[in-house]
Length: 299
Image (tube, rainbow, N blue to C red):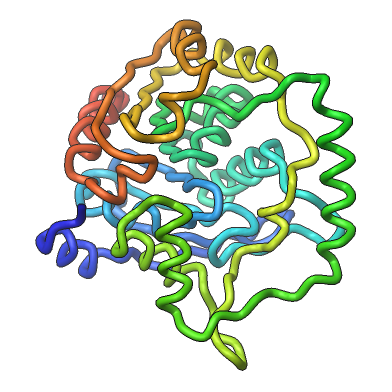
């Protein structure tokens, strides 16, 4: 749980707004700048946003930290009408963000969806990533290849119908906070941070900023062989913070994925899927130790 001390630190360290122009649209996020310090790019989970890393930020004061809103999330642009979100699109946008920042290389920190995206980025552009830290994630979700035809059918049908749907509005911000708290299994403080960045006031109440298409079936999942190929191709140091009550520990493929990664360190910690928000201090301890141990030596 967030303590009073942590809450005070959070309120004094909300970060500054960042806006990055890319060929596919504008990516926005939060920055805790520390010029000359090791660079960390943080990627949030599905339906979260850059505020996911506000609780951690005070503990990462020794780094030049930027947390992105992935496309369709938070304040970042939505993808063009008629298209669907996919991991490969997110990965390409992260690399475009690095170009816009003029960061040749950095540390990558990813939670949940952001961790899955981080593995794709690291596998496809290894020269850009010094080390990868994953919070309750180890690679992309997978499903049997035989499921692909039905998935594609459901995705196309759902996206066709969604074009005619309007965003739902809620009378109070507190209602959005409660919905996010229940769905995400996070405490009220964490839910409020996420909702504050992901809500906008309308004529009759509040609505989500995030793209409604994020809730629709994705058009394609990798099969497990493809997911493992991504993981085995990663040669840089990797850290996974595995939550005792999170989503990853119970997945049947987690044990095998851990076994096949060459330079993986697993840190088992007590907590739920959003443990970096609920209890950031202990998470930051192992995270900072890992990152500092892989800072390149000065020339």
